[in-house]
Each structure stands twice: as C-alpha cells, then as structure tokens.
Amino acid sequence: MEFLADYGLFFAKLLTVLVGIIVIVAVLAGIRMREKSRATSGHLEIRHWNEKIHDLKQSLQLHVLDKCALKNELKADKAQAKEKAKAEKKQRKKSSDQADTPEAGEGAADQPGRVFVVNFHGDMRALAVDALREEITAILSIATAADEVVIRLESGGGMVHAYGLAASQLQRIKQKGLRLTVCVDKVAASGGYMMACVADKILAAPFAVMGSIGVVAQLPNFHRLLKKHDVDYELLTAGEYKRTLTMLGENTSKGRAKFQEDLEDTHVLFKEFVAEHRPNLDIEKIATGEIWFGKRALERGLVDELETSDAYLVSRCDAAQVYEVKYVEKKPLQQRFGISFQSALDNLTLKWLERLQRREIFF
Image: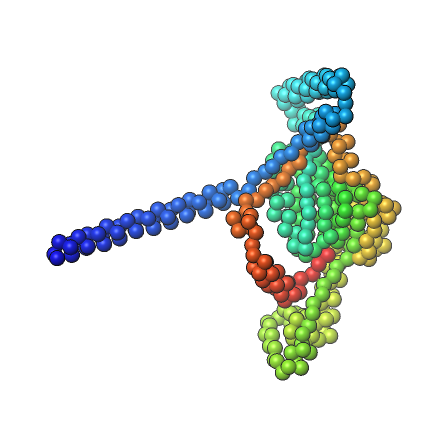
C-alpha cells in the first residue's frame, strides 16, 4: 500500500510538471503566432496589364487565325518585343549615366513613366480605405515624378469622416508630385465625388453617376410610442449641445435647429473642398445635392473626359508599363468560411442602432 501511495504521489508530481510545461509551451506558441500574424497581416498582389492584354490577344489568335497567319503574327510580336526591350535598355543606360552626373536630380523626369492602378469600391463606411492606404504607401515608396496613379473609383458616398480620410489618401499622391487620374465607370457621388475631385483628371463612362454634392442625415424618433406605453426615457448630458436630436427622447426645436446648423456647416466644408480642387466649377450651381450622368456631368465641368477605365488603361499600355496594385488582408478563419446568418444579422442590427444613436452624417 505504501508503494502504491508513493507511486501515486510521484505520478501526480510528474503530471503537474508535464501540464506546466505544456501550458508554457502553448502560451509561447500563441504569442509567436500572434506576432507572426501581425507581421503577415496582408500582402500585395501585382497584376501586369501589358502581359494581361498580350495573353488575351494570343488566346484569341490561337482560335481565329490559320497556322500561317498565326506564325507571322507571333514573329511580328517577337520582333516588336525585341525592339521594345532594346529601347528600354537604352533608356535605362541613359538614366544611369545621368545619375552619375552632378545634375542627377533632374534625371527622374526623363525616365519612362509607369502607371499604377488601384481599385476602390466604397461602401457607407468606406472600409476599403484600409487597403487603399497600404496600396498608396507601397506605390509612393518607389514612384517617381514620371509615373501616374490611376484610381478606378466606385462609390455612392457614406460617412463624412470616412470619406474625408479616403480623399486625404489621394491627396498624398498629389503631394508627392505624381499625376493622379480617377476613372469612374458606374458611380462617384457624394463622398465618392469628394475623392474624385482631388484628381488632375476625371474620366467617366457616358452614364456614370456623378455629383450629389450635398449632406444628409436621418434619425427615427420613438418618443411618442414610449409615451403611449408609459415608458420614461432619461438622457443626461454635460454641454448644451452634447446631444441635439435623439432616438428615444423628446426632440426640441432648439436641438433641431442646431442639428440643421451642423449639416449646413458640413455642406460648406464639402463645397470648399470641391472648389479648391476644381476651381473652374460654378460651385453654387452644382452643390445642390443633384446627380448627373456622365455626359451632363461633362457639360457642367464635373468630369474632364468621357471614357471607360478599360479604354484608358489599354491606351496607356501602348506607351507605358501598367501595374495593378492590390493589398489583400489576411482574414481570420471565421471570415474565410463565412459566419452564421444569425451572427451576421445581430452584427448588422447592433451597428444600425449604434449608428442611429451617434447621429452619423452622410455625404
């Protein structure tokens, strides 16, 4: 019996030590995984448009040309590529020679320009700005004054602060002295147009929606419903205008007037921003909250040319190397496999109530 008791005590001690070791190893592994996850939270994906167009052309040629015509076409493409490579090599040598001279600072403008393409698909909260800031940071780290950045922009607008940040990201490109072109195929309204107006040149498809330089806010009020059912609602604030309109309390004419004043001031800021970047616009005439399709927007000066992003980028491939830059964020396993319908519904409801309570203002 004494042997069994000693053995049991020894086994318990051994088990305790093993459990302690396992816990320590698990904690260290967890810390390392979190650090690794933070270090590799996202990555860049680069797509070479020149190669993409060349591959599309060859795929079609394989199906529509006879063997003799295909052979001649491939031979011509090879010769053209060879000549282009020689010209690029000559240009690089010229740039290198300029870099060795005291006036090397002026050589960047002589380098062949590249085109960097970024896609921005905005929602109400402009969540795509998280990827946009990474993409722009990457581009600015290697871009020169000879390069151009093209933003393919699609957005109907949303929260003021979110789209203000997105527009500020585009201003970074201008501040570095790069040419900025915005292409709109479908819609760039309100906050979307706030972003677009930063560009040196705005291109729009003939029926793309542009404009809507206005501000809107809406808030349901359940005060009468609560009063009908004898439900009291108390809201305590410090500061005269800490809360002007509420969902559940009784709204006053004074609070309503202050809220309207805030909207008007936001609208003034919006108009000033657009006028600063597009001084030729008759801002009072177009800042009515209206929208215009591409052709009408061109007549009013909201855009510079009518052209789709595809047509513009294909034409740029004739003169420059075009690279599409996309920042892909590493998503948790739950997001990759999808969350349950109930979780998504709960999340949506909470965000909706939160937004209403904050009285968020939208472009």
